[in-house]
Length: 183
Ligand SMILES: [Cu+2]
Image (cartoon, rainbow, N blue to C red):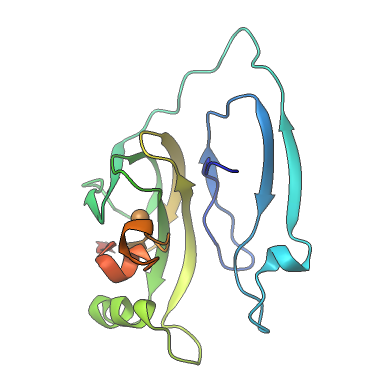
């Protein structure tokens, strides 16, 4: 009934995330899957909004100039930009796999290996990371753009999309996690 067309990934309160999408004309919904303290996703509490995308104007802006590519694959981030210095960067996010993928970005406050393990089976209590934006799920073959604002420290890219070919396991449990350091 739906196809995933991207959008900004979860971000901590008070910060902002930026994406550029090339949306075909049609009916859309914006929604938020982040769980509330009672476990219900925000969309069940009203965080869902229909949007109509009308026909494109004759003259279209050029795609953003990306300084690097993030390649999403089954089930790994097979390429990430080489320049991850502190500051703003515009990345092209490309789904090169056969499944739907996303590029969630986390700022880590624990070693990456420990965070990766926790994400597959989250224990109760505050997580050792902060949601730092990124790019929401897109269909195979699609590309979008995100401008990320990096601070010094440890980060990871992660995909939580469930895999139909693997009993619905989230991609992170299949290895779709890649850490990087911002200097
Ligand atoms: Cu994925």
